[in-house]
Amino acid sequence: MTSYNNFMAKTETARRSRPRKTSSSTPAARPRPARAAGRAKAEAPYHHGALREALLVAAETVLERDGLAGLTLRAVAREAGVSHAAPTHHFGDLTGLVSELAAIGFRQFNAAMAASCNAAMTPLERALARPKAYVAYAQAHPGMYGLMFRTERLDYSRPSLHEAAEASFSGLANAIGAMRREPISGKALTLEQAAAIARAWSMVHGFTMLLLDGRLGDILERLPEGTTAEQLLEGMLKSMATAKFPG
Amino acid sequence: MTSYNNFMAKTETARRSRPRKTSSSTPAARPRPARAAGRAKAEAPYHHGALREALLVAAETVLERDGLAGLTLRAVAREAGVSHAAPTHHFGDLTGLVSELAAIGFRQFNAAMAASCNAAMTPLERALARPKAYVAYAQAHPGMYGLMFRTERLDYSRPSLHEAAEASFSGLANAIGAMRREPISGKALTLEQAAAIARAWSMVHGFTMLLLDGRLGDILERLPEGTTAEQLLEGMLKSMATAKFPG
DNA sequence: CCTTTATCTTTACATCGTAAAGATAAGCTA
DNA sequence: TAGCTTATCTTTACGATGTAAAGATAAAGG
Image (cartoon, rainbow over all chains, first blue to last red; front, side):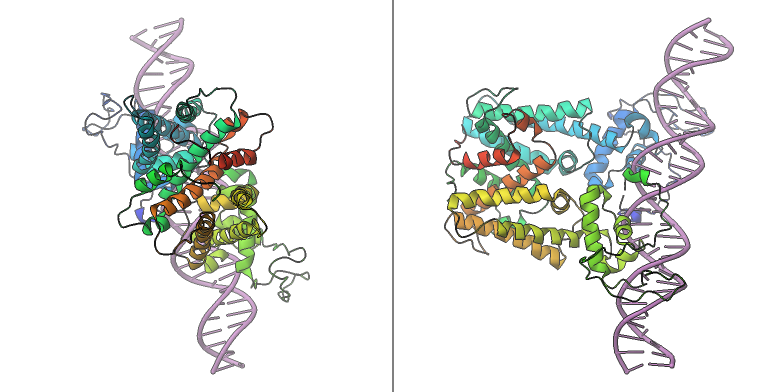
């Protein structure tokens, strides 16, 4: 896409040098026999054995290294050391691969959110910890967050993505419910509940997007030297209690 | 890109039928003489006369019709009835075209925001009108809003885009300052001021993105039949005054 | 009037997604 | 165990894209 990578000047041939995973890589070091060809060394076997997982690992590598624009089917195949058409068999098309990777991202994200709170926290600590963990995940995995929330090529009808994204939403809704000391129904919401959920999600998501896009630079520059985005976020959250509306 | 439009099955030839603007189109109906060629009718002249403006008009048409993925240099050139390489001369590359179009979007947006308030409004009315106008613009021009806030291919070093985007930010900051009844300095901000600005922007931007992405469907479905996104937004804003933090 | 310059078209190339056909190996069945 | 079936991966091919480079055309200006 967009030929940003024209500097590569590699005319899509002479590859086939599947980089053996160095040590204890995810695909469990498949101990497959080398093809009985002329080459004596450990030539990559015709069948990979765990290509699907290897492609997802490769995709995350490419995404965080080259950004959203660099995440192409062919780049992922190159990274995994297989032909450019190999991913098709496992994911159908680019939307399929991207959607499965986004599902992994949501699961990572959900785990990070769950790990951000523990039972010993005060309500205030808890109310600060979740948004901070949210932004921290996005800053640590900007490519993933962009994949999850910026791309238009996601297929939410895929069960894995649907479930992971819905779990993320439920986690947020339940956290808001706990803060309000009232259970959140899976069926109906009051306008106040819905407003509280939408407000929390909109604020932290919007803040994250603006931050990743560098749009908050204008604000951070006008704050005392060294003020971080995290401190600004904390200020936003803390001052919400006393924020007058409208004036 | 992505060959979503493969159904077109038009092998990029046999075009050259510049669609004369029907009546009072933007480029002011350039009254140029037809090329002295064999064809008797009004053949398109070699030099367009106002191609730059025509390309921007065509780009907005393509964007709102085919979405972000359909906004390609070649599609815009087709829409304008010129060769696929013609835009290069006026915009350099796709980033240039897209950035100039985004600047137009910001100016449209700024005008809509300015028109949303008048002197007769109460502070409360004003505080509700601006966010509503913000979301209304995005809903009326989803392609434009996506171009302004979703694309990674924007070049903010371009003066037109830089100025338009900064004007947008200034408008928001000043509105917050007016609500707080304190002037907003162009140089330094207190943490409270910065927090108020970032909170307002994050909330409305995040809400808009989630709404355009269909991510708020889960919430709206759980509300009483017929509740609109606008009502949810209003609920978010109104309940902010009484929102307890953390719980 | 002729040269210069700006504008637009043609041609070309590397990249992309994806479809289709061929190659290879694993699995199953008889 | 031999052969057929199926899953997996590679090759080849095509239309799409962005962009560079060279040619064509017309406006501008001496």
